[in-house]
Length: 126
Image 1: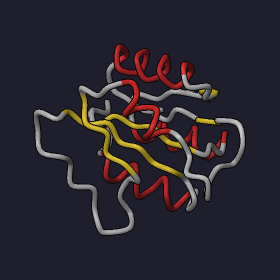
Image 2: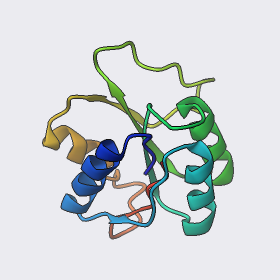
Image 3: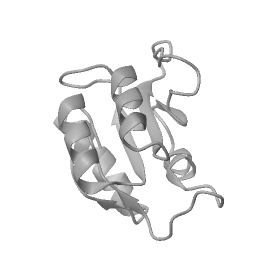
Image 4: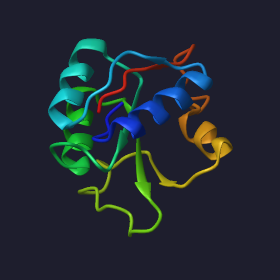
């Protein structure tokens, strides 16, 4: 999980645990998130657009280069236009606009039947 703001990390961590995901690590910025991704090999990366360093688009592209099958969810404020996430096919699987309902969060993090690895495993990188 990656988010520049500590309160956002606490909120996202709590929501992930509520939905039975193991949170292997958290980072404030892109470089910390990528280091966690290399170490823990998660199935899901959850990142807020507000990172302490690095851009969400670069984080997503680099994360996909490290772990091609990784599911990526980016959380962004609905009050601003969605972030531009680079070239087609390299963006996140989902951009979840906040404020969101808990049900929307649950639907976003739930693996599709085709990609479900088993019990939830998430390495927060951010």
